[in-house]
Length: 112
Length: 118
Image (tube, rainbow over all chains, first blue to last red; front, side, top):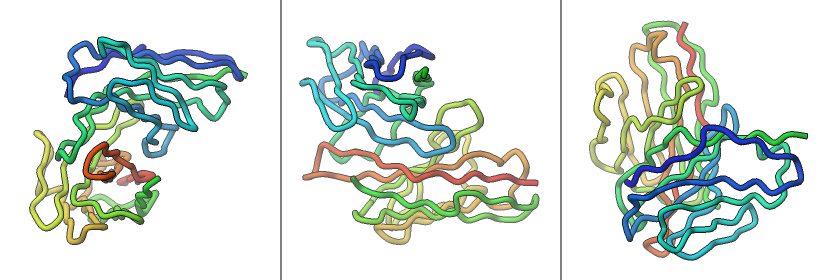
């Protein structure tokens, strides 16, 4: 799996959009970009994933650059409950037998 | 979304005893499940891959005789920490792969088990 690079921490004001960047310059053509988050003492929670096109669901939006070397996770209206460690992971999708390889992620702190 | 149930959520045991952790996929079949370990303020580390009906595959440095994995059905995998010692105290998390139409899959995670060995 391609290595990803994220800032170790970020702050965001409650109610504002939180934009979390991720670099994955060595990503291969068949690797998806996945985002998970982990709230303290809980298992990781799936947020969103994409291959080339931008994606949106009820939790977030994922913007992937045209060259696919970086992406941004957007939480449109951050709340205090969004405080968590966010992990960006590049992984082949399609029935492979590999588990996710977690980096250190970004600790997002939502400020009241 | 798919649900992965993990039990117990917390266990405290004496040194030398064995502890079993269960991981169930509630609304989908999982031929492959994964076990992770997480120490405080660190990221998740993959311990082993559990395959239904076959032996588990362990990551380098993980003792297979100490961390016994059984994946007897398509919805259940268990991790047994044998002869637990204080250094085995950690947060253990399982995950299962859910295929959607054969591709575009997601991994779903259990809520984790905090093991404390006295």
